[in-house]
Image (cartoon, rainbow, N blue to C red; front, side, top):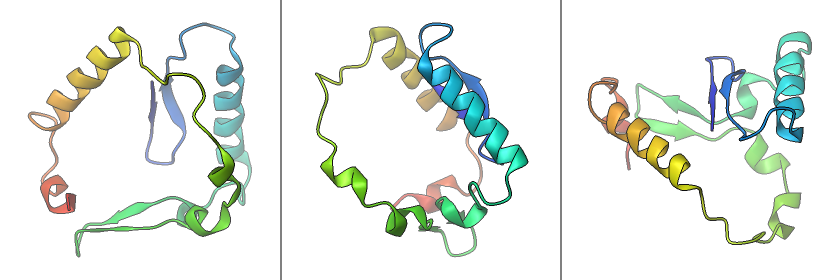
Length: 107
């Protein structure tokens, strides 16, 4: 599980074990986001148009073509603990953590 801030830098990461390859990738991502002006611009990622209530696609959707060849690896079953955490976050963000515009963004 991971959480990011407004600038898409990771603020919380739990990859299951300290020192895994994912830890290093997340640290590298954060460093590049802060130090490189062209690593990932705001137009790269999807974002919400709060006035018209729709999603504006980021440029990554038209620039990345190699993901088509990725096939399922293993069973892709999440751990019970991960499912429980996801349910907790879901309940929070549809109740007391809800923001005023979120229901307009659901299609």
